Length: 134
Image (tube, rainbow, N blue to C red):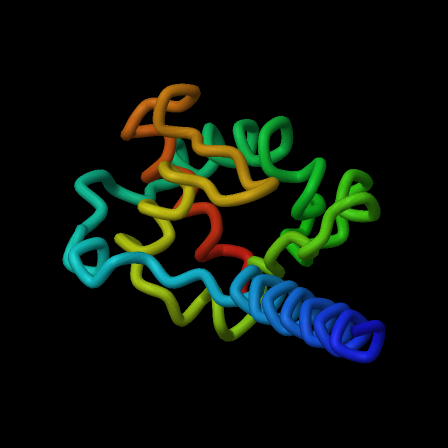
């Protein structure tokens, strides 16, 4: 009976490790719904918009994503998974609508900003993110 108990314990431990590993993998991939890709920025990305967006970015996003958007802000040290690098090809390759959806909905440590920032402010942040290309 003890052998069956040990086998059950080992099987349960392996199942937990497998599940935890798959959960961790899921944290690294964040895909917006296909419907988000069709969203278009209704505003303009002019100098005034970018200036206002930089102010919002500095106070709201930079603590985690860093002043230059590299995912290296002071709060990033304590986060797992680490904040996205806004200068990366992956982020810059996402549609405006996908980024807007993620900014609005949040996930894990990434806060949902749909109630903290207006639509206009969130769209302006998308404009600002585009200036952070490598």
